[in-house]
Each structure stands twice: as structure tokens, then as C-alpha cells.
Length: 52
Image (tube, rainbow, N blue to C red):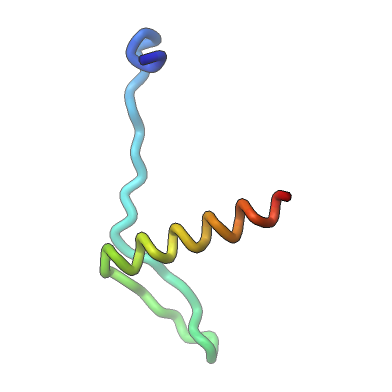
């Protein structure tokens, strides 16, 4: 509601691939939407738990 009153547009981030390193430092690129959602969820959980 506040955004519409202030006439702000909504900005979104589109994650259609994810890059990570494997056990031997090999680069792994993921394009599965379910796997990307899982990785993002895990990353945000770990990031937030480090702030306490």
C-alpha cells in the first residue's frame, strides 16, 4: 500500500540459475527451479543465523 501511495514500482529479482563450488572446487551450475529455491532458502537461513 505504501508503495502504491508513493507511486513506487516493484522490483523483482529473477533467479534462473545458480553457481556454486563442489567438493574439488569444480563449478556447478544449477538450472532447476526447485534446487535454486532450496539453495536460496538455505543461504538466507545461514546468513540470518550469523547475525545473532
